[in-house]
Image 1 (cartoon, rainbow, N blue to C red):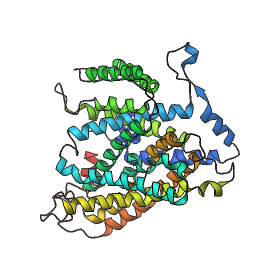
Image 2 (cartoon, helix red, strand yellow; image 1 turned 180 degrees about the vertical axis):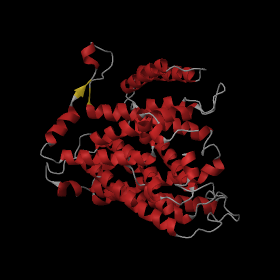
Image 3 (cartoon, one colour; image 1 turned 90 degrees about the horizontal axis):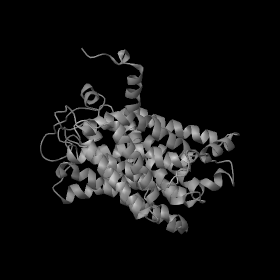
Image 4 (cartoon, rainbow, N blue to C red; image 1 turned 60 degrees about the vertical axis):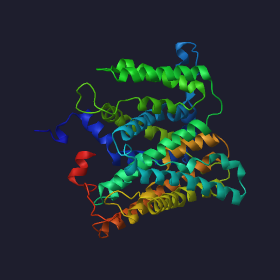
Length: 430
C-alpha cells in the first residue's frame, strides 16, 4: 500500500513540493517581488552591493578560464544552466516519445509557437520605430519567450475542469518556444566565438552522452563532465546556458537496460526540484531588482518607449500571434486542433503565452546589459507578465464555466477527452 504524502521523509516531501507546477510560478513571482521591494527600500544599496559581489575560484590559484563573476552573473549564467538542462531533457523526451514525435498532432501548437514569437517581435520593432527609439531595437527577442513554469502554474490553478489537452497544447507551444529562444540566444546574442574552448565543450558533451547511456551511469562522472562543459562553453563566448540544453538533449528518452522508466523522466524528476525551487527563484531575485526611486524617478523609467513596446508585444502580440497562426493553419491545411480543444480555448492560451519572465529577463540582460534601457525592459517584462497572467486566469475561469460541445475542434467526429485538469487522472499523470 503506498504511503501518504505526510508519511514520506521531509526531504522527499520538500522535493515533491518544489516540483509542483504551482510552486514554480509562486516562487518566481515571490522572488521578483522581494527583489523589487528591497531594490526600492532604504536598504537598496545593500541589494546592489549583493548583486555586484564577485565570487569565484581565484582563491584556489590561477585558472586558464575566468570564473570570478558577480552573483547576478552566476545566477544568469550558472544557475540558469540547470533550468536549461531540464528544458533540454523535456525537449528530448517530447521529440522522441512525447507530443512532438507525431508531426500531425504537434503541427498546430508548433505553428502557434512560431506565430507567438514572430508577431511580438514585429510589434516590438513597430512600436520602437513609431516612437523614435531605434537604440532599443537590439532587444527584439525579449517578448518572444514564454515562461513554462509560470504559465503552467497559472493553468494548474485556474484551469481546473478544462480538458488536459489544453495543458498539452500549452506545454508543446512553450517547449517549441523555448527551443527557438535557445536558437535565438545562440545565434543573435553571441558576439564572438573562441573555437578551441567551444570544441572542448562539445567533446565533454559527447563524453556525457556516452556515459549517460551506460548501464549504470554515475553522478560522480556526469557532474564533472557537465561542469567542465559549462566552463568551456562560458569561455567560448557562446552563452553558457547552451551547455545545459546540449547536455539535456543527450539523455536517452527510451527506457534502456530493462529500466521501468526513461532516463529523461528520471533526470527531470531528480533535477526539477533544484531548477524550480532554487535556480529560477534566485535568478529572478537578482534579475528583477529594478530601482524606481533612483535617477529621474518611476515616471521617466516607465515612460521609456521600450516599456510600451515590450508590454504590447507580450500581452497583445503573443495573443494575436498564437490565435492568428492557429486560424491560418487550421483553415489552410488539413491540420486541426487536438480533441477537446476549441478556438475559444486559445484565448487563455494566448494570454498565458505572454508570460515571458525568466527567458525574457535573460534576453533583456543579454540585449541591454547596464544600458539606459535595461531597467525599463525589466519593469516591462515583470508588469506585462503579471498582466498576462491575470488576463489568462480570468479567461480560464470564463472558459471553464461555458458549456462544451461534443466536437470542440470541429473535425467532424466526437472528441475523445483523456481527462480534465485537476481531476484524479491528471494528478496521476502529471
